[in-house]
Length: 328
Ligand code: UDP
Image (cartoon, rainbow, N blue to C red; front, side, top):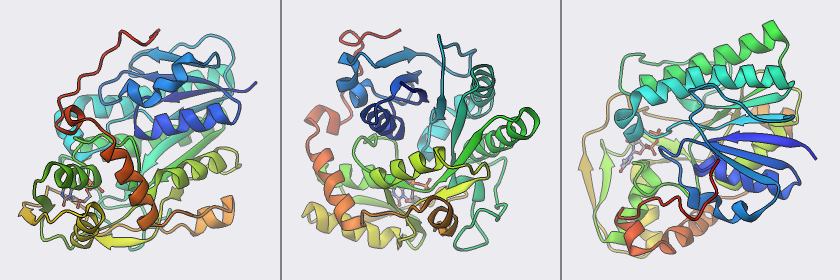
């Protein structure tokens, strides 16, 4: 049985990856410091013999018993609100955390895939963004803590690949959505759906003309699995190129939720990228992968999840409890 370590296991993407690898017959070790993750996301796995959870901050030395075949590094705050609230941890997990995991991968002879991001392109001057574009990032702005940590993460991963011959993979992940996104992480989709469900107006930042391209989580997971098993060490964009402006997206959410909410305008955050769309030709060619779930279907599934949350969760009153879990 192959063994995989997944960091950020209790988060949005990490938890979906735990499910997928467990379902595919792997022994899964989940790791998370639970700053932004929620154990509820992986609750069903706790009863399984082939799932283990380590409550650990990977910015500190990481130790795992026994052999390890793969490491998927998905631990990091990943929303602009989080970068403002926990900037130092964001920098540390992308830099020190990645270094620790690369050391672990080297010691175990494991293959390591890192979750990089479209944020390495910053506010891009090239559209759509292909992997050979080096980006337009402000290192000292509020997003710099994430963007630069992720750029450093790519650099150190390539250094381990070139210098130590470590098998590494780099996924540049574009905006992804789906069930288990944190309602209060400030990202646009949970923000809009949460506002609609609470009967509040939808907050559009700026004039809403900025664009994003949203990928459904199942498609993302499939892309990650294929990249992991490919032999391609250079970065690969994983995302859905279907681009939409934020104001049109707000209209879609209002229609989807069947509410008659209005939109209100707020200041555009510093360095908010004006446009973003992945060029996925490389993923199509190398991984034979492209997204299958269109936005109408993906939003329907995501809305069903948010509707199933309790009133306490909807109003951010839910607190994480650890008692019912066995946490190492
Ligand atoms: N946004 C918005 N209203 C919100 C939250 C976000 O208009 O309540 C905008 C935000 O300014 C950005 C886009 O939606 O232009 C996507 O934001 P998100 O934080 O989801 O992701 P990122 O900016 O990292 O792509």
